Length: 84
Picture 1 (tube, helix red, strand yellow):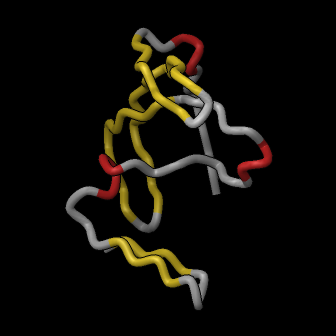
Picture 2: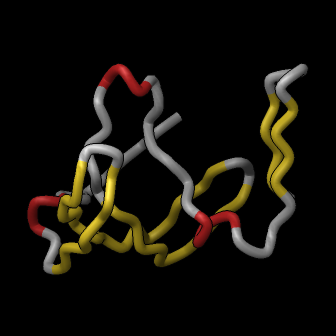
Picture 3: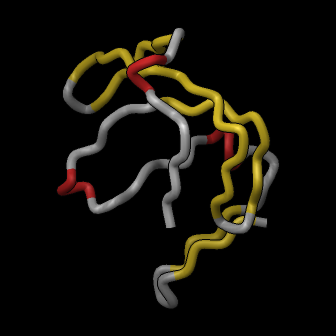
């Protein structure tokens, strides 16, 4: 479940250059007070507010900064992703 409260990427003071499959773009960087994903919590965590097309079928992407220092398991047979 994705819940966003009181964050407006359009008001972000910082924009970061991002290279995508379609070229170079600038995405706003905002700091979330709290993010919870794969049963892992981060506090005061900076994220980029880049728009993904509806056809992507995802709410967002977790980067290496979120995954670093953890063990990530992707089990295609069971359809489960775990991070410990």
